[in-house]
Image 1: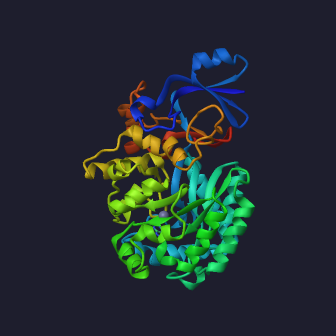
Image 2: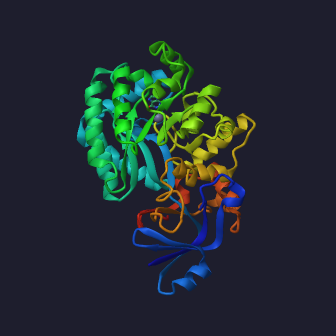
Image 3: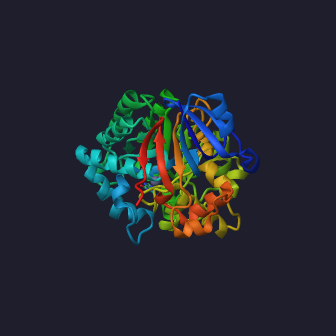
Length: 430
Ligand code: GUN
Ligand code: ZN
């Protein structure tokens, strides 16, 4: 058994009382046996309980649960940071041409590895990932994640209209390919499948209906898509689905609004849509760097809270501008400042750890450092350069440290990333 000594912070409970419910051990101990967390607490207590454990000393650093990125696109790793467009022309000009390259399965295998390296380097141990329309792109990602026993939720993108013909599915292939991928990968090892209609404008009603059938047939698979990100997109959805009572209703009509459904963005939702999301138990993925980059708008966290909607933080790479979840919270904070309702560092931390895990009904495995959870954790080195050593005191409180890193930090603050009890990334020290 391995005992790690460091400052430790996590949310042990399924809760939203951020100030009172965070557990912080300034001199903490995390006991790991093989792939699992066995105990967590004050170092002294754990060391007394397990005198035979091998101690690894990370004093001066923080151990936190591995971070969860609840919405991003692995094929867009190579098309991050393209100038000048809002959503619909950005998709046409940059995204679709990039995704066409994944017809070549070897290309998918190469980019899947680069993508996972980027996650690990930034302390992300679980991602909710869109692949491309090609079945092989999902195979590539699940295979690469399996090699390192990483908990990935992913799905083949389905689109059967309003996209280049090279990316065009049809209702039948969307259903049979998705079903085959579910049978092959869902709940195999730590892989989980997400039915992935790209967004309403690129699916016919027949395709949405076919995917809704699968959602009924496999009630524990995830669903992921986009919702109300951009005003032109919303107007387009209205013209394509004239009978629907708004954007969310398009998905609702086909049984795609439920627990374990994760909707990217939700920037321009109506009060009825907020209420329906709250009732359904679905999750909205808040993607601040993407929303700023594409000029989509400012997420309304206050409405989400008021309607008891699950919210999880996400990068949305490649419209998102970073793989780093700390920096993503930094932009969430700026968005919330523009709305005059700042999101606290503890809430930000919750939305990328336990809050996300609870939203996705995965908190028995990820998002916290509770005994019984899988040993996915990160070692953070807050004082990694001249400026952070000046700003962040050696004995800084967790929320001050986390906030300063959300503004000043990047992958240099991630010292190590552990997955299933194995160190999978270690920063090179100069
Ligand atoms: N809406 C439909 N597809 C996409 C995508 O790839 N990225 C973002 N940000 N929004 C979308
Ligand atoms: Zn997206």
